[in-house]
Structures are given as structure tokens and as C-alpha cells.
Length: 255
Image (cartoon, rainbow, N blue to C red):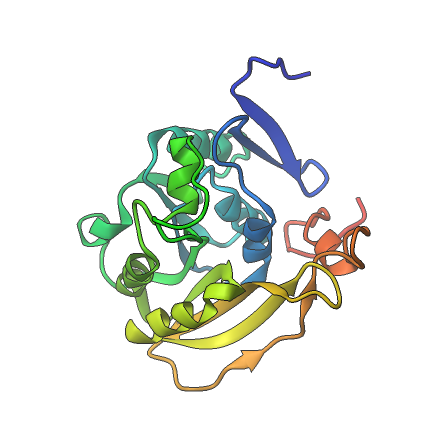
């Protein structure tokens, strides 16, 4: 049992096959990060970069689902980076996942240009002067465009991606027009789009978007993703599957 004074909670996914320490008070990952980790199909041996990795949950999910992946998880905040590195060690991913401190706005000083096959980001959703800011700095930086704007995140991703490399993001549907504008401005053509709904009949809440660097105009709109079967009901089968344990080959298992 974890003591109340413990600054972290010890959480798990995939029926306990994946562990994640995260702050008891401060920025904690949410369902959107889990959705992003399942949205992509990286291929057999991809080089992956996560921008703004937090405690590392997206990178951890990718490392678990795709054993051939090599992942660099970039995080600015020292406290979250410390947890990220602990989570890498806890899950025995040290040979495949690197936790790296750095400001994505200075990415040219941190990483070589055009060196990754896939970049992922769950960026701050709110502009700096909007919404209700949390007084805890970790949450404020993670949720508001204080340390990086959407434009800066996408510019960093474009710099890091190889030609024909892919960027995957999760973002509020209400800001979708701005997201598409910024992607195309940086030469990233949206190729796959999935709208996430809380339940059937609700309005779309989130967008899962994959864009290709230097790609042509052709957008595939995937079937809608419902988090819950109905308002106030249990998870949908698709959402529940995101938490099910998988084998090392990435196949669902009942074990």
C-alpha cells in the first residue's frame, strides 16, 4: 500500500504488464495520451521521438506494443524527466528508450535534423492567456502554451522528421482548424484523422491526426472512436481494448 505522503502514485496498464509512476499532485497523464499511444503503427524498427513526454506514458506504451522501436523521449521539466527515467528503468526499457531533457524550441541544438521516422506529441491544449490555469507549474506548462506554442511544437517535429516521416498528435477538436493550418505551414500534410467522441450522440471532443512530411493531398477519415458505450456507461470495446494486456508481438491476449 502506498503511503499518503508518497509524492507519486504507482499506476499500471495492460493488466499490470506496464508500470508508471506519476505525480500525486502535479501533471498526470489522461486518456488522450493512451489514445495517442495506440493510434500509430510505427513499423518494424522505427526511430521515434516524443516531444513533451511528461512522465513518459506514450513512449512506454509504444515500447511495450512495438518491441523493435527505438524511442527518444524529450521533456523540459526536471521533475517529470526524473519520473520518466524511473519509469524506463522500472519497465526494463533502458536499451530501447532514452529520456532526454531539453526545450523543443531549441531542437536544432539537441538532435540532428531529419533523423526520426515518427514523432508524437500530446501538446498543451490551451493558449497561455485562456482557460483556468492550475497553480502547480507542471500542470500549467503541460496544459497551457507557456513553454511552447502549437506552432513551435509542429516546427520542432518537422525539423526532426525524415522526408516522408510521420507526425502523430492528439488535440482538441475545437482547435482543429488551427492544427491543420500549422501542419501544412510546416510541410506536414494530414493523412489520417480520427474524431474521438465521449459517447454516441455527443459532439467530437478530440482529434487524432497523423501527418506526413512532404506528403500529397489525400486525407483518410477513420471511423469515429467512442470512449464510452453511452453517457454515464462503461468503456466502449475499443477503449477497453487500449488497456488490455498484449503479447510482445502486440497481439491482444486474455492472459
